[in-house]
Image (tube, rainbow, N blue to C red; front, side):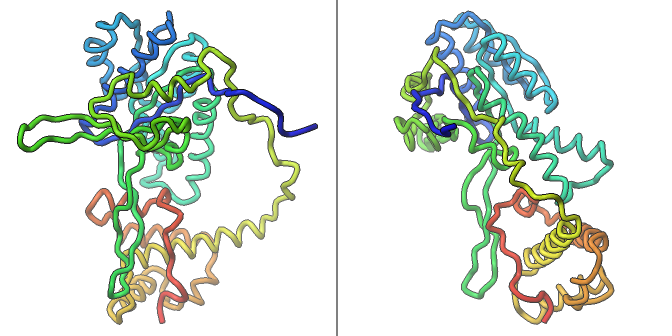
Length: 359
């Protein structure tokens, strides 16, 4: 059977994402888009607002009621409500606003920690969290419903080597504060920013188009945006037509060989060793005598040896316990941004030390 076949534009529903810092206008803009789209498609269904921070109460009075757009809300932060909300919006043919997706991600992580009586998430936890979160993103992409989601903005980080050869953590961009790959899912991704004219003290909200898969407004900026600002993208959609998402029934399970428990364990040992190296280098990135001594002392206090070759022979359980002990000693380091940057959600570009830690 042929894998490819001719097709028309099969994206019939708006999948929009907004991110921004406090006061940037995310909720207001999401409501404007929803109200404008509601009128544009002549919908009779209500706008459904999944509300985690009471933003609905304000836009209901200022936007939905003046535009005579029916709306309903559910005030919840439970991740368990996300997929049912998408399914309900699909069944009722409504427009769904999720504000803020950040709260659902945090609630899910917090519930996981509470259930397992953890004080902090560990490396092996992310596999479960990400696979469960993917159930929502699959629904988001494939559902026959217009969905606008808002998320808080956070900074992306990476390491930069200075003139002395030391690695410094620097800001490299802005991302949505949710599961790491959430920002990739929307077809229209908007960064909302607030700016002030220092002479007139006038504030305006600017919509920066980070991604527009239609290419019609990609990279553009719209001060104090309205629904018409985003019409070129919406007009590109196959509104009222067939929506074809991603075929999730196709898998590669038949290609996967049987499990090799011993090989799996060796791989987990390698990962645990890399975690230990990475956190030591992050907090003691230099190659001076003092930095090497600091790392050696930490290893000695944790594992009763500063021989990296000997540590590499330790069992997985001892390595994991040692990593947690080191992390409790070195973190938190005093600033929220740096704490975000060293979590397991940090960019894949994070480098570990080359060679042995202690020389």
